[in-house]
Each structure stands twice: as structure tokens, then as C-alpha cells.
Length: 226
Image 1 (cartoon, one colour):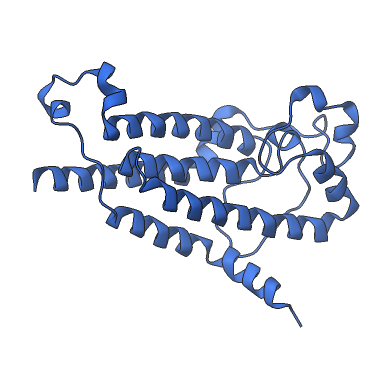
Image 2 (cartoon, helix red, strand yellow):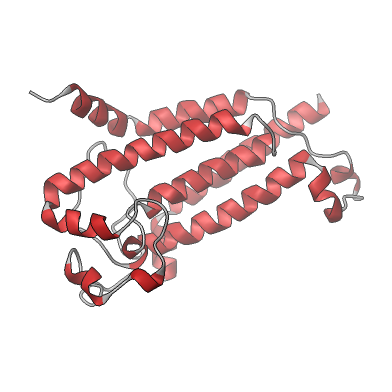
């Protein structure tokens, strides 16, 4: 009979999209940081970004979006298509590309996107803190669930890889060796997709990000003009 922890993990993974949707609704309901008045008058001064809460938040968001997108596309070059399935599935253990430096580059990317959305909407303020804590805790729990699944499926192969590869913080290139590819899929045997193939494989992510930001811009404008 499955343990309570297993049932909770299965529930969390199966309904992760709904949970993220609830977090997104809570974010939209939070009071947004407003565009400065000069933003619409044409007199907006980039030099004043550090003085304006909203503008600085947008700047942080753009940096997070860019870094997260590059990491996500690079990861998609080595793994399968984007999926929103309700159960885990993995034909092979991929240890190439970003997966030779960290175990969960996609979860790091997801966290970066989520925090970017929060900074875009809330600016640099204390409102960021609770949202950041919830998102980071949620992504860490999802990664823990994935680790348990991969360990059960690949056993010693996963443990050998995990012992050398941090979950989130990439290890320096200097710590890599030829023995690192002895487990999982050899990079020589795997033909990665091109950058654009990987980019378009995740088209739903880019559309979701665009829609979300457009919705938040509308939210700011409604508050600004009303």
C-alpha cells in the first residue's frame, strides 16, 4: 500500500499545473507596481531605473527571462518534447549538456520565469518575498519527487550521477571528467537538437509567458488609469 508521502508526491506532481495556476491568480490579485508617469509621456529616463520600483522590477524580470530561456532551450536540446503529463516518464537517464552540470535545469528555468513574472508585476518590494518562498519551495519539492522517481527507475546509475551533480547550483567545468559520462546517455551517442528545434519544441511555454506578461501589463494599466 503506498505511503502517505508517495500519495502526496503523486498528487503534487499530477496537479502541479493547477497549483501553479492558483499561485498565478494570487499574484495577479496582489497590488501591482505602477509604471512611472514619465513612462507614458516620452520623458522616461533610463538613468532613473534605480530610483523607480516598477522599472527596476522590469529590468530584473528581463534578465531572469533571458537567462531562464537560454537554460531551458539548452536543456531541451538534450531531452524529449515538452509535456504536461500527470505521471513521470523517462526512457533514458540524460546526463549531457546542462544535465552534466546540474540535475534539474528545467526546474531552475521554471523558477527563474516565475520570479521574473513576480518582479515584473510587483517590482522590487517586500511583496516579492512570500511569492518567492512559495515558488522556490514548490519547485524544490517537485525536484525531490523527480529524484525519487529517477532513483527508483535507474538505481545505481542515477546515484552515481547524482553523487557528482548538484541539484540546482551548477558545478564548475573544472570538476568534470571523462568518467562523468560513464552513466546515463553518452554525449557521443546522443545527437542533440538544434537551438531552433529545441526552441519551437517549447512553444507553449513562450506563448504562456507572453500571455501572462500581457495580462499583467493590462492589470497595471487598469490600476494606473482607474
